[in-house]
Image (cartoon, rainbow, N blue to C red; front, side):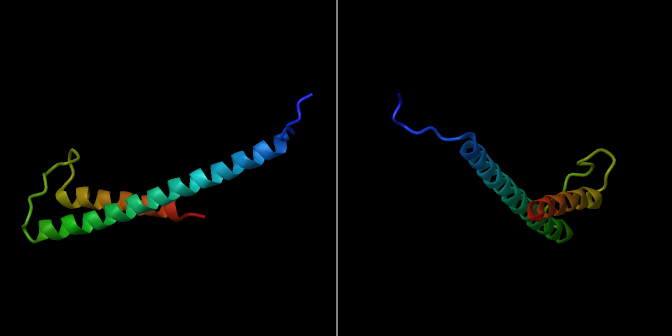
Length: 87
């Protein structure tokens, strides 16, 4: 007989659960960081557009004004940050 003790399925399931929690935490952290980065980027672009430093492409999304396009980026940033911060 084999002298090495076999691990029970309970140990395997516990490890899978722990790995799943770690993966979920990493995904949430990534979403949060992406959301905050998008928000900061939106603020910087807004300041640059208002200050006349850059020309934002009109109709970036068909039929939308510059303000609506920038607002859409800010909303997406908020949603990503919110998803990433959920418990």
